[in-house]
Length: 75
Image 1 (cartoon, rainbow, N blue to C red):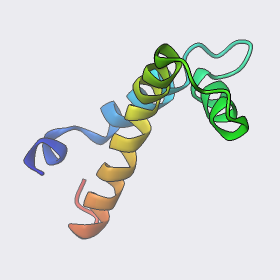
Image 2: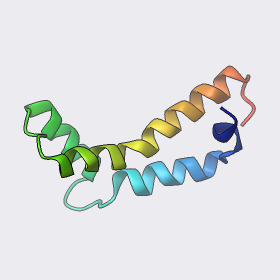
Image 3: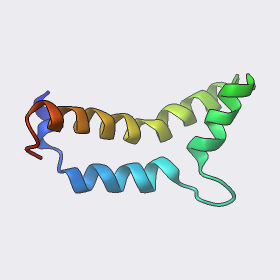
Image 4: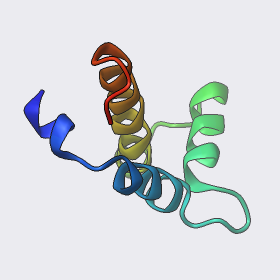
């Protein structure tokens, strides 16, 4: 996971906040797609792609945090 170690933590956090939550109004896009997933209306391929696209920064952030914890707190 060398590529994950090379990503700076501030970059990953900014990506998760801005790319993951954009557009912010009327509600974050990833939240809208998660609600669609929960109620079973996430069926269009574009909506599934959108969830993956907006959810990817959060997945990278979680992986980075787990990696930092595994390495003993070295960011």
